[in-house]
Amino acid sequence: MIYLKTFKLSNIKNKNSNIYPFNVLKNKELNVFLFDSITVLYGNNGSGKSTILNIIAHKLNLKGKERSNPKVVGTLDYFEEYAAKCEYELGEYENGQTIYRIPENSRYIKSEEILYEVRKIQQDAVLQESIESNLAREKGRQIAKDFLQTEEGEKQFARFEFAQDKYSNGETTMQILEDNIEADNLYLLDEPEVSLSPQNQVKLANEINEMSRYLGVQFIIATHSPFMLGILNAKIYDLDTKDYKVRKWSELENVKYFYDFFQNRKNEFEKR
Image 1: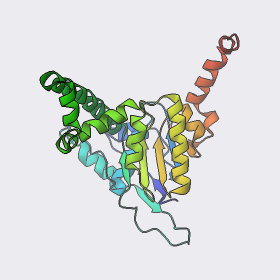
Image 2 (image 1 turned 180 degrees about the horizontal axis):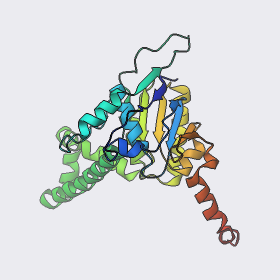
Image 3 (image 1 turned 45 degrees about the vertical axis):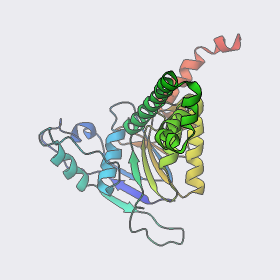
């Protein structure tokens, strides 16, 4: 499903090219993005991936949009003025009818949010262990165990048990994303592979493919992970190019670097 069909970045300029977001987008030919059901914004650090996602989130008024810092003189006004002057076009339903609004539960999920939730879950898991240990010292291990099984104990420590379970399975980030993604919505994901192993990055990419295909979810994803790029059934914009070219994943600089890295060391694998 394609809820957001096109997005055109504004071509307005500012005399001070160091002001956000002009400092990120300067020296670029800002062509129109044509979105698929899964679209990737690829680029190295500083390429503007997160900035463009945030501009889209502001223009569409999505949950999770990140405001500029109003304490930094002028940045809030400049950013919101820029976002307001961008243009977009919505898609169509399968019956050909025009979509008139973005689904209300659509949102922008940032890598910082994911990391924050991971840390919070980890802290909850450690806290639960500490509480159980203190109860065991004060009341004895069996009394503490019995208390945690009572209705009061279950209510008090449900959050901690939930945290410990998710922390222990090694897939906290994936669980956070799964808990926040619903069918028939648009999601902007900023580096969703954060803290995931290569195996879980592949698993996540496959799940995104499945959600897009069967649940009517549209994704616009910022990433430079070669594992995500190689698995996602996505249209890829290369933000490292001046005009944001569409490329195959195998043509991307980061992916070719990984390929060369392992090619230069393949003898070490063949000797095993």
